[in-house]
Image (cartoon, rainbow, N blue to C red; front, side):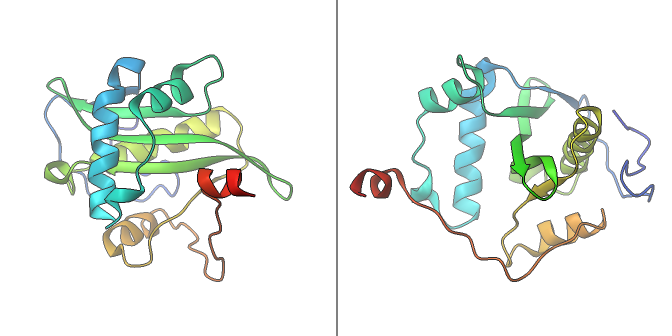
Length: 174
């Protein structure tokens, strides 16, 4: 892990405040209840708490069942998980295998202290180690702190794409 405050992507110095005893590690099944708490905290922040419909069992099975589809890194200090980043592999017919960052969550009391940077840097390292052709994610257009965070990495933030989806109910009603 890069603890010297240099972005693995750009080589630029980024501000980082130490959080005592912080470690970044791979998530385990035992972490899932806390991860779901953070997912719900994020949904509240994004003004969509009713949109979280996944159960703890579904979340655990998707990450640690017979066919895991996601992997996560957690930021932990003094036995408390204060943030996590969850990703899965996305295939682009134009670009090949890419990391899709589903969520990067840092609990409110730990924001602005470098936790998100350490998690994001760990994702970049993982993407390089696994030979992915890049990394993609979404950010809400009103989430200025997140947009500014990603701009420090010189991320390309695209305009012009609309999100589309079908819910479980819509799938079964068709």
